[in-house]
Image (cartoon, rainbow, N blue to C red; front, side, top):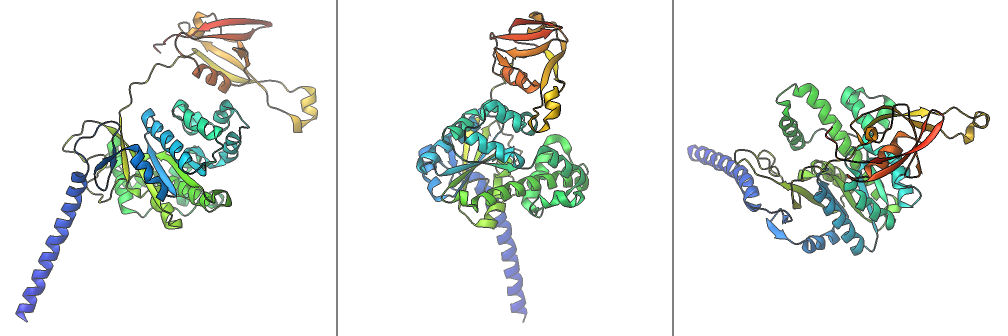
Length: 422
């Protein structure tokens, strides 16, 4: 009996030592497999630590129905990778692909369909999807992607909820939503332990420390999970539709939504079990040896992605030109005809300058508060967005002919854009 007890104790000790050594091995090997030195442009197969060419990476596309590319929103190189994957998949799949994009919200699906079919302009796309508010990142990073999509009539799937809905969840929590609001959401899973650990670390890295994790963090976490379950729902919904038959789906989202697979990929996989591939963008930077590697958290024993593309940190932003005015929409009065025929009524605006900075391009050109903008470079101006969009096409040294109405007099003023310190 004593020998059996000793044997039992010995087994427990060995097993406990084994568990501890396995945990240590998992942590150590994950770091050891990944190259100690990486350079911008490297593509690393994470499971083996091998550097591969893009052509070798592309060979793995054929076995996946879904390819996730995790972007760094503000890094142009990250978007160049997305474009490269898009073009390669289009070629390999004979055009039978679709693209799911976090940047566009589900209520805007009809607008995206019109873009793909060539029915609206770029300006109308950005205005109708409220790009500046709903997304806010530089559209020039996405322009070549969207142009290729349009030229080849590739379906685009709007993935996410609107910014306002996200704010409502952050304020009230899932339980605080109205019955109507909750009906628009799939089931939201907040039970993944590693997913929670990852987002806690993200929040702490942004200076929140250990502040009220039971309050602020829980609302933050519910929003994150809502985003990811809604995007997963959009993906699975599209892939189960007749329109998706025979198509490969590329998914362009922020890297945090696919890292370690537990964001969107896991939520999609457990619904349809389709083979997928994840490619994460990693910005090369000097690492503090005392901190976790950005791709390998010590308390998350998972591989961050199937492949990692290394890119340089973005260069400082180039100075954008400004007009130097405060403007607003000034609603035009209805005509008698519009009052009679409400069905044909089109909302019309004028754009008026509320103020003009003296040291700005507008001020130097002699524009004044109260001036109404009629056109810019012969393009009619009907709303504030038209002015913003037009100015964004300009660079330092460019000129712009602005037709204005000052009182009862129409006049044309030429503005020259220069680098502004403000």
